Image 1 (cartoon, rainbow, N blue to C red):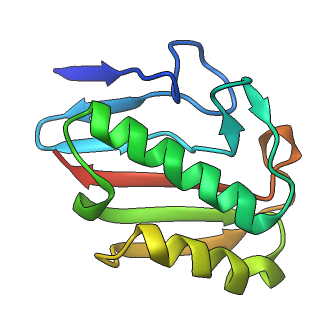
Image 2 (image 1 turned 120 degrees about the vertical axis):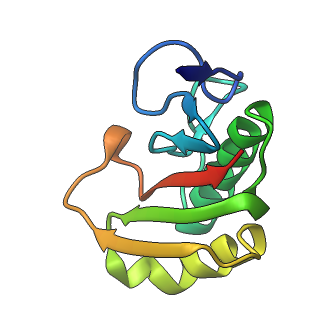
Image 3 (image 1 turned 135 degrees about the vertical axis):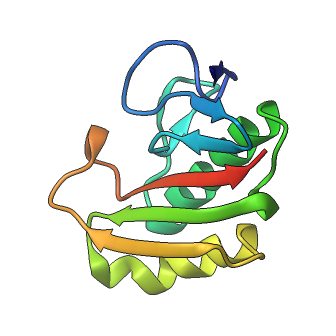
Amino acid sequence: MAETVYTKNAPDAIGPYSQAKKVGGLIFTSGQIAIDPAVGDVTAKTIEEQTEQVCKNLAAVLEAAGSSLDKAVKTVCFLKEMCDFAAFNGVYGKYFTSKPARSCVAVKQLPKDVLVEVEVIAEA
């Protein structure tokens, strides 16, 4: 049975970012973008600011599911521009200290025209 996990950082509504699914011993987050839950929109402009917000959103969703960023086993990172990788990685590395398996790809466009989106699979 799958359990849906909701937080103010990942509300019930389907949209450019959303909740997680808890299945057995794993939690699957959907792609999180830099939506500031206080205003419901993207306020961060730089890759560093957006990555910071994405990581905060992911941490909140995983915490609501009874997990944490330290329990991440795999991340998939989408960047609008691969030239932003070093700046993205600097912020990402502060949050994902356990260094989960990761893939990072450049994509033509992301929801709300953000610069970064991250998905996580974590242990419950």
